[in-house]
Image (cartoon, helix red, strand yellow):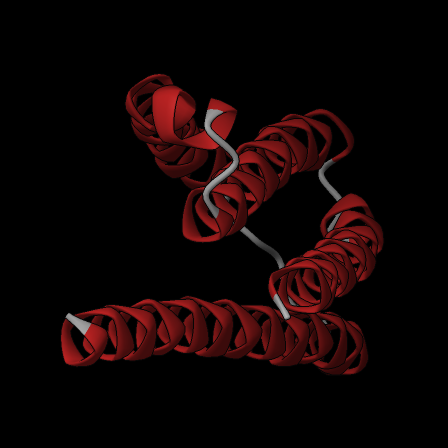
Length: 148
């Protein structure tokens, strides 16, 4: 009986470590992504590009609908407080906000015939993604501390 309990505790610890590790990895990669988005927006500003507003709107709209559908399916796990579901919820929510930003940016690019809205909103999106990454990393640390 004692071995069964030890085995069960070991497996539970492995699952908690696995969820913690994957959530930390997710947050770290999201942080890197946000940083790259900012650098790319600045680079494009120096190179002088002109984005296609209608393409931005079309692709971001489809992505927004897909992410919204995914959020509906993830809602149950998120409400149970599972760390991986929380992380997934934050990622998908961030994707929806980013997609909405790209839709607005595409509309402004079309309306102004300028690349400036794309560059400004690109930097804002990068900052938002970094903020979401910090929230995921904070949640992972809080959950890990509570489990120990």
